[in-house]
Length: 352
Image 1 (cartoon, one colour):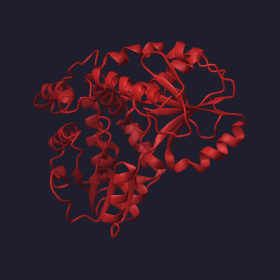
Image 2 (tube, rainbow, N blue to C red):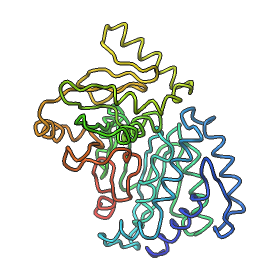
Image 3 (cartoon, rainbow, N blue to C red):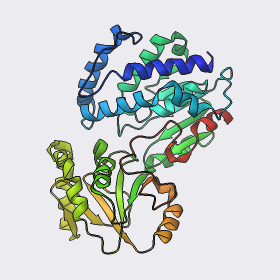
């Protein structure tokens, strides 16, 4: 298959995904292979929460729409324009995927196939259904992909390189197990926000999206705030009140009650609004339903510190306070060329 053929298939997948949204799912007669897939995908979305309790319809639809927006001809062309891709040289690439948020491994899956390689996928037990369904749709559009996609349940074998995503603990295992193979091993990361105290209510509401989307389970979710000395959290709490309904979700509420109790029994000082706790802490990784915060005095010194801790951080959010930071509300809208851990997956695949 040529690169243009591969791109056209994923553009068709984007058109298919664009039909599905939480408020307005409409079948488009012009979408290829809709009849065997449209209703089946709706059924799968409805069942997602039974497969993984964190995969609410709202969050599954959000992920689907994010990929529908990304998979356009314009975006694919812009993403791949800087690479020379020879689709005649195919390697077997093993993927070990996480399952913290819906379709979290799709970018790796796309990168392997679009670069002309064969993918061996080991899905997370928490996300075993969405990606295989989309793979079936891709194969229906272009049957030649059938020889390029394999989902593996047992031991991974006969691969040339591996991309594995997991926790810091599993990363140590991956590094040992795959020490003789070219690899990208992704560890736990968190995202942070740097506030000046001059943010508007609109910006702080958008920051709530960075915190609460996917219940805070993603590496692109903000789990830590850096605030200037003497900062008042009143405006922050007022703005994020829009997200109060999160406490009505049982799994989130259970985490809120448990983590708050643990903090209080340890005599930690907390700020609390009934659905989110704020705790002063130097760590970046806060538990579900909690955000850590830390005071800073000099933003230049803070930038130097964040640069030194870059291997722990996925995204930095600010109103241009920090170099290369992104705007409020944008952490869950990465472009195709925004690579996890800032490791260029396509370059890795082309040079392995």
